[in-house]
Length: 584
Image (cartoon, rainbow, N blue to C red):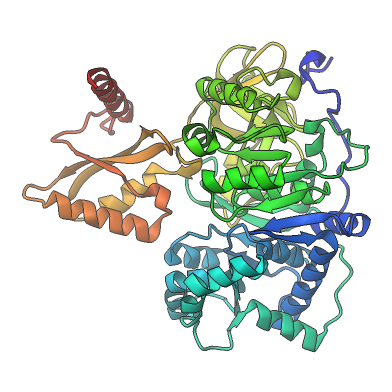
């Protein structure tokens, strides 16, 4: 019996507390599977299939093209792409060449993309042809203020079946391609491949230091300010190599045949990139790439392809429950379904477990917990204990504990404190932020460096963990972190605004949306102000951060030291909504 796992009865039989992470890069792990299972399906996208052999060839072609473009080891390549095969190909080509994959939300405004390019000194950028209208002009206008040397435009439908490819070209890509700047700096994917074939540069041996920085992910971090998180191959492989123990496959066993994963989670995020892509491919499972989620499309995928695995945020599972299109869908094909990215309420878990039972599945929805500072998931509910609500147990090689946020002393089981995590999946640090890295990665008295997550939770006596709330201010909208301080500071710049506060309010589908409270100058045109707030937040932040509701106050509730009392605002809002529901 160990301190981390005091009750073996709640552990799955295939689970091992410790294992040796291979001294290999992400590409090297994938290369091994490509050689071992060349004819097995690696990717599925819009009715087209790609084998592991074909994927390996695509990666090689891409790598040669990148070399011909001037890419070299250590360069950062900004990948601003949705869930399409070219994202996968480009990721592993950059990794093979010893570069850094700088993952950017494909719907990020041009201003945000430019900020990230400047911070990361990225010399290369790729985004899809259908985004040319939204991004090309602004990026070209400010390109010389960055270190960009080449922009690679990926056709959205290149790897789809012929009908889907033609449809995308006819409806969106044909018009968008006309907006591509006429400059040798801009090139299409086909241009890049042809350049590589013409130059035919020798590909280097696929080996590099698995502990080097190989991925940049972008997150609010544990301090709630925007951060670039530096991650290594070992960070990713530490999760990927063990993840199939969650479906009963021992670490030393051959990888099973015929597994497939519905990759709805976006690949710019650690959850989708590591679990939905890398962990599946290096375990010989097929990734069914879904560039845009809809319940109608998910129902079609389940009926036609019978996937065995899926992960999502609570919003996704709520949508499945609420859409009549899912009523006749058979879920018996699934071996496991996982939920993360936001807190899964016991009520939603109960409803979805009942849905699964009614739709032919003996699975139960299993919750995980993680943060970008550990790539993604660092704890997971095991199958044998999947009837319980909570975030489960630490992954192999990981440790968790609960401490008093002030004294840092360990908290007894059952008492709420700050969740801390340590192990080989912990990030290298925040880019250009040594002080903030030191605040997030803290040396404790036990001699280990821990991530102090800023999240509150507790542990049961048998070692099972629970998440309760966040210390830091963050609102999850459709599973995406939104930081109210960013919204507030942007709105506070407007001359009409005297005071502002943003909170999250419940939404039946998105879980939360942003509501803004305002104190404004007398005579302010409130309708015009709201339009301006929506315009500026939409242009500079992700769409999830755009306020959906507005309320005007004469005075704000204040704390004893004169700060806006957010707890009072949130409580008043809760009571107001409860009153409205009771009268409905």
